[in-house]
Image (spheres, rainbow, N blue to C red):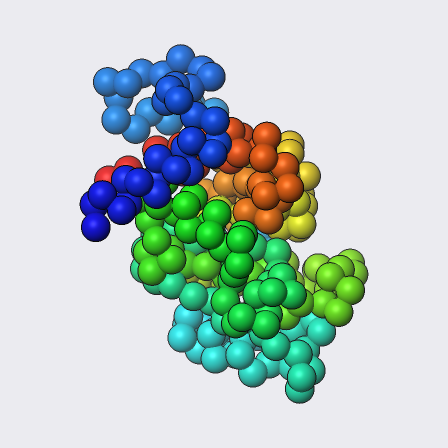
Length: 238
């Protein structure tokens, strides 16, 4: 089992173009978990309490609500929706923008070739699908793959509430849409540093990176994704 994990991790590092593990900035390697003195940049304004009171106040109840509510954008009798997967107690929550067409058909996040790459990314940080908590900003894929401003505003309130209930040690956002909606800036500007996502139960340390789908079409981004994963591993050290 250990050999399989190591092989998978080395495979990801090789694809990312990594042959030496170094950082771009000097680091105090004798300090196990050095933190920057400057405060984290705020992801956006704190959520309005009245707007979140209508949502269930426990994670189990919220899961049931997500599965049944008709108030999600694009909800309908024939619209497939993907439920959160993995372990909410893992300390690491990952949020992608929406299921792909392939994901919706397969009934799982990150299916197919993107899923194989996602599994390598997880293995590279010593995780698996069972040891992260994976959800979507929009559990339902829009017919045209786009969400209007009103829908985004609604989903932002839902996502903040969801993250607040899960209370992970770290939240990883995949892709530009999630970064713009929850951090308020493009993924390319947001990645590489930590942000504080305000939720009804307090701020959550949040990092943005590329989606596995984007890494398949832009392999040169893999080195940047690996740098983001290194930040994540540093944060999640015991």
